[in-house]
Image 1: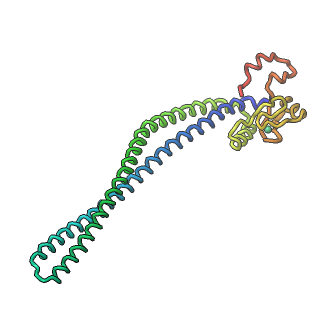
Image 2 (image 1 turned 120 degrees about the vertical axis):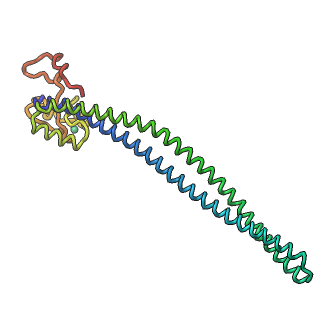
Amino acid sequence: MYKPLKPILEIQELDIKMIRLIRLRKQRQTELDQLHKITEELTAQQSEKESQIAEMTQSIQNDEEKIELLTKKIKDLESKQSSIKKIEEFNAMTQEMTATEREKKSLEQNVSNQTDERSAEEEVLEKIKQSLKASQESGVELEKEISASITEINGEGAKLKEQRDAILSQTDPEVMAIYERLLKNKRDRVIVPIENRYCSGCHIALTPQHENMVRKGESLVFCEHCSRIHYMHEEQAPDEDGAAPTRRRRRRVNV
Ligand SMILES: [Zn+2]
């Protein structure tokens, strides 16, 4: 294997773990944000529903006040009518009473309809309140759990960074820079083995010449399809000193 790749392969494993951690943390943060959003939406729905119900109550009260006035008016008309002698005036008063009675009935119908509508809205409000309570309760638990998990992720991340820093001093800066640029671009392993003459990054077949170049391990060899850096597993490539494959296998970095 091209020597400068060895320490970077170790770094790559740490970086992949770090990428996973960052993804996981983002995912957990998204869960938390979603939960906050649901709670916010429910709170907004609750206050909207409450003001709608308050408006309905106000309108019902207005109608009830009008009904009271009309009831009083009808009573007044009744008491006046009893002392009236002229038939025309009596009839006119009867007509006025009938009209007032009709107006009162219509208002009473209105009040009854509005009261039904308000009951329905109150049921909706109750449901919103229950959902909000449930979301707040589960929110407290989930928030605790997510915060703990994020703290754990950060701790693991710090450990990975420490291990990485320790290896970094052994790397060739130029090769390291190439590796980092590729990693930034792919967010996945960018130093990959050739397996059965296929790039294990993009799974496209490679030429024997390409494989030979990689096997020689004299320079960086890039996949011509996906730009990843290739290497051979060492046990597949016994070199001139013919060192024992078992010893080499143990040192192989798992991919
Ligand atoms: Zn490839």
